[in-house]
Image 1 (cartoon, rainbow, N blue to C red):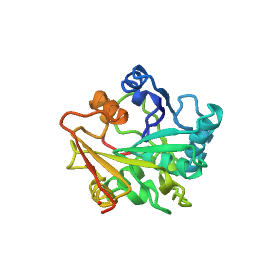
Image 2: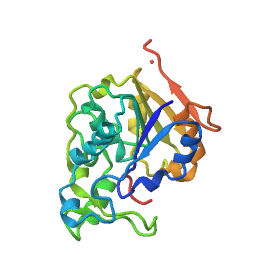
Image 3: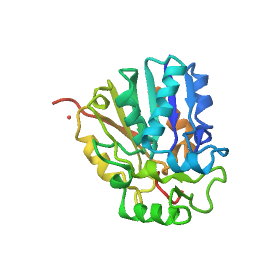
Image 4: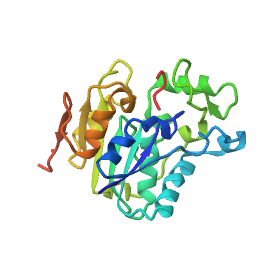
Amino acid sequence: MATFILVPGAWHGAWAFEAVVPLLERAGHTVHALTLTGLWPEDDDATVATANLDTHADDVLRLLDRAHITEATLVGHSYGGMVIAAAADRAGGRVARLVHLDAYVPRDGESCWSSTSEGYREAFVAGAAGTGYAVQPSTGGDPRRRPHPLASLLQGIRLTGAFAQVPRREFVYCSGWEDRTPFADLRTRLRADPEWQVHDLPTVHNAMRDDPEAVAALLLGEPVADASTHRHQAASDAYVT
């Protein structure tokens, strides 16, 4: 049985995976859904202001230590892709699988800020105008969303090469919002990389809410209706988070 660690995108908490967790547990797996530092309702201003990408990677590493996990499957949605990449690079071989669920897949030195589109950079700036350190969620979405630490979106990742040694690496491209997605070029890049498996899922960005059964099926390695998978051999809300 696998141990899944689910990392949400910006503004979100563990609740973002609330429809997926029971599906994985029902299949007999252990599941930990995280709320990252600075995203808890009780976190004070200082905690939000100082939380960065390193802080969030440490959230994952502390869980690995505390639960004595040695073969984790890390699943990161959107901004969470930055977090699982940083954590996997520092986990000392304790990560067996990475799933970037419509999520950023950074190279050394990149940040969420540098990896997203100009339109979303403008949205980050506008969202942080009130405090200078926390990006407000867009209006009209889930009321559980919290202001997101700006520093975590700006900090460049430092990768030693260990991230690239994780045995199984997957990217899930959500094609149901192609007019706004910042991940189209990333999908093209990873489809050409023989070390990555790329899945297409016909949902909007928040696939966990739009089609939790399909997300769970992908994580469990089961066939997904209306989804396609591209495997290459060596011879192959308003904000995006």
